[in-house]
Length: 218
Image 1 (tube, helix red, strand yellow):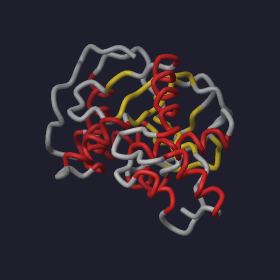
Image 2 (cartoon, one colour):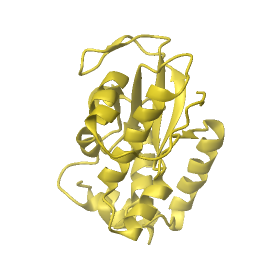
Image 3 (cartoon, helix red, strand yellow):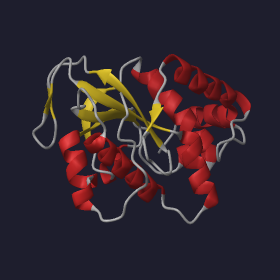
Image 4 (cartoon, helix red, strand yellow):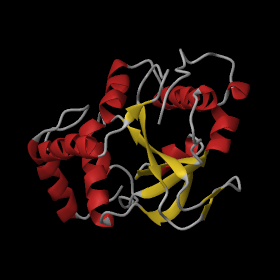
């Protein structure tokens, strides 16, 4: 990610010695807003997930009709699962070492697929979606990236997510200055539940990811 000299100086001042889950300097405010957002828009853990790095929030879809990569169509009013990453848990996984963060996320998605298949839900969600600047890792997990902005102020989202990356990445603010491409704007990532079952359902793997709650409600 490339920065102008002025932007690089700004992030050095903002981030200070932040990293590995520790917020320092002005990024303490980022942690405060992160906690606030979880109170305003609470998420819930995935039943049976061993790692707990992913959490979900069921919401009605309010955008225009959207065709996903596998041909599924999400329409206004459909139930979708807003997917969130527990940054603190991810930082703990990385700090422990010996566990690949991609494998950890895949196992949580396996647990989500099992839960959705077995839980007695009145309404099955149509798809999962999230908002991230880390679109390449999302693609590796099977999500498709749309050109849609995440809303709530594209520039604000970009700065906020870059700050979280500086807090939770082991390289801290140095991670933001790595590479030659400019810092991307956050984009929506989507995966239909049909694709989730194909990639992460019991037919796609043999190991049991943990106990599954059969009587859970969204």
